[in-house]
Length: 306
Image (cartoon, rainbow, N blue to C red):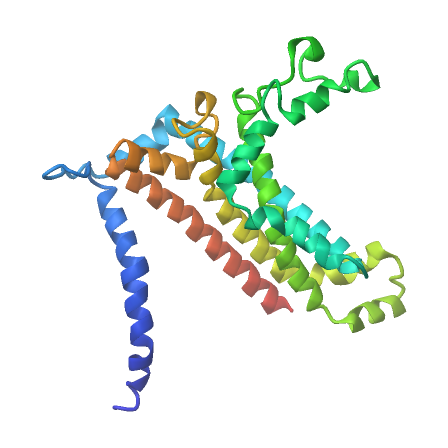
């Protein structure tokens, strides 16, 4: 009996840490989401599912979901695709591969607040390098490509101040920042592919680069791709620093960049509405849990068929 319980002593520290660091905070947040608790108040009232009803019925939170899902819909496919493309190109190089790895990975290592200031200057409507560069093409054959009917005369977009462009601009910065991380993950997956598989594919008639990619590289990168997509989606849902750096007083023009993490910060920290902030947190964790379970199911399903 003593030997049969010996394993419990080994796993007990891990279980205790999981409970204290993970389960207990989630349980407290779930309980708090059912109240109108605010820091400094002597007590609180149980409001049941009222906070969740507000999240799924009020227009402010509809904009929150809209901004979040638009950001995720842009960042995930583009950062995954660019990360895969950069990894394939670097993996095929015989020289300067480490240099390109460093260049592409710099946005991941850079302090986002400092980079946000740089982007804010670059996207300035009058002196920013983006609009100044676009103005240089006025009067050329590219003048057919205009943002408005009279783009050169009326000026180019207010990238960060126009509600029609703000979320897409922030999403572009998210892609710029995140695809280098995906590149590193894909490079790890590419190095694990045995060269003998390519040799076997070549003997079977796969002579072009596209055929080798389609028949060998892409199938072998299946587990890596599932992991990369899952991590990228979770990281996209967690976007906060960029939004807070550009719009510290709100979720951008017309709440067009009012993403979930900023909503949690605004409600729980700025407005001291801990109950509604906790409710948004639980909704966010539910999304993350669904994605994690979907990743596990996809990996196990693929392993079963292989």
